[in-house]
Image (cartoon, rainbow, N blue to C red; front, side, top):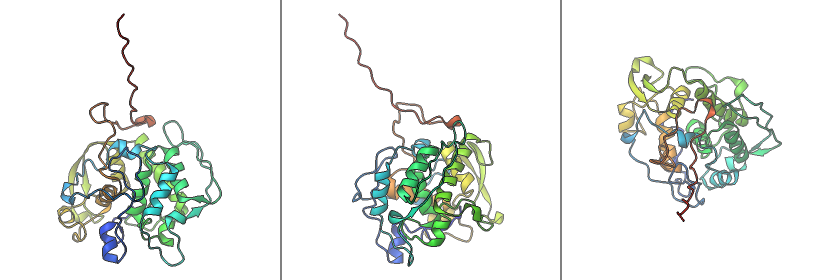
Length: 307
């Protein structure tokens, strides 16, 4: 859950150029939140300026919760398409495997059981966790990059703390949550927990959100418009300040980049994070209390002509 600038650790396209890696051309990104991932040679969508970031609506519920948006094969192809420069002796995510353990049913509307396996690929782990907990694989992929640059600059440290779960900005990480599968599953479980029990510090409505772990940096009210955005603030409780939005690769002494980076990475790899599959035809996804899925389109039944 730590918050650093893209140039400091979240090596997506611009950061990769600066650090000497190839940019993320061919990252296999779709341009709408609900569309299936395109071929691995697709060019990422253009990133809008940071000044267009809306702190009250970072990602739509549809984008955040759509667990079927990428298959295991599409996730694997995406991992293989990303330019990866690992630490010595460390595998890229496309080649990473880890044995996983069974996880129980967490109850109605929460994560379904996860059946463990021997030496499962990272893509399989992400796909299975997404399905079990009703969280989009894109959400988990962006989280892995936001927290540890795990797709582009993987390290042993990064795999241990893959999603930043149990890693507050103001304290050391809790070792009981270490490990790639442990991190991915617990992050998805936590997002579902926020959804099932939304009466928290960050919830739909007007809430003061700080600019930095240092309270002296201040806070400002944010009108949080949906549950997915509330989830992100409960996970990383900071918004970018004016200096960060003006220069997102530098900022100032009170900058916190986490939620801005989530928005930027999603834009670069998957298009607009606020997109919905059926705008104007179905009501927007709600807070999904009780695990209710985003609405699916209803089949149109042709009218029977009069005799």
